Image 1 (tube, rainbow, N blue to C red):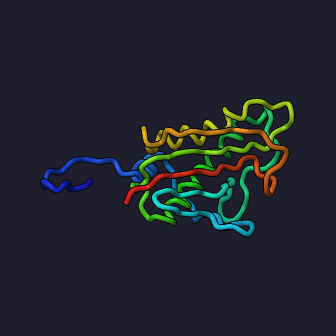
Image 2: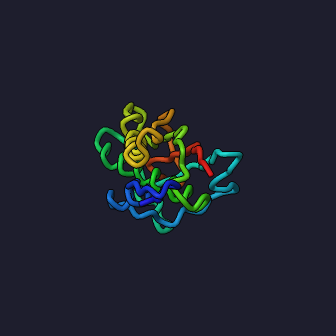
Length: 164
């Protein structure tokens, strides 16, 4: 609960409370696997480098996506979104500072005949909307690729607007 200047108490659901209600515990953000930084801040924008479905230093969802493992690929995309949240939290410390999820770029390590990449990345998009409401609506691309780092099923990067 937050206290307003007028001393009137208003119940405001904080992002951390929403995460807890969804059973999401943010992991330690993954460290870069190459020569780059995980987040670049310029003005009120955060550019989050591509996040793969890592937990405790290990890629959880690997391999090619096909019609046969669409649900697993969606879990992979959701984990990428959770890692994006972890990167935001490390950078600004308070997820309530997120004022807009601006853009996601989703990459799906898929077999050549697979064409449901948007359904895979929807898992990340839907999670951001569920957590942030209208602030979670964003522009996006979802593309199939022939491979991803560490044989990850998915990789997602983001542009996030924050307020101070």
